[in-house]
Length: 240
Image (cartoon, rainbow, N blue to C red; front, side, top):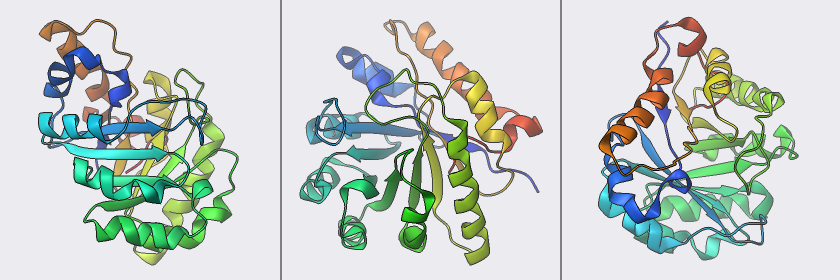
């Protein structure tokens, strides 16, 4: 069976915000998402942005806007992020006691509902909710900061979720987030031979003033979705 190509979802945290239009112009809506990491300095020890930046991104791209809420009480902001243009909204199971209620709330806005899980949280905590999901986001680093090493042991959660997805014929996307680079992207892809795969490619954006530099960066993350090699065309680390 031919593996489904991954969806590459570069995070706008890697972008030069002073040139956001140029940065988002290189995203191909047919095969890539725009990933928005929202942090509140409460759930995680960092602060990023809110609905205003998501709204700006929405105006600048036709790609799917994939919003990851790393925040306490995310249900208070779901409607605002959807109004800003989020197509997919993922909340953390660790931040939602009434998990199904929050997932229903997300769906009621018209967005796809996702659930994220931190490395220290066992797979068993999220397993009961898999039938309710459009997306499962498995953190392969501790959320809050970039530059961390990929945690390959988190792929056990991916394998367990994939098995349930196949057994119950579910259709949720599996996405991994954190520590993605050339080697780890191959590791991630190598473990998945079936189903849709979403790879979050954390671009390190230096100076992207020139189209040439942007094109080079685009090529770098495309390598992993275009490859026909079984070791890459399978999935391991990031999943859809």
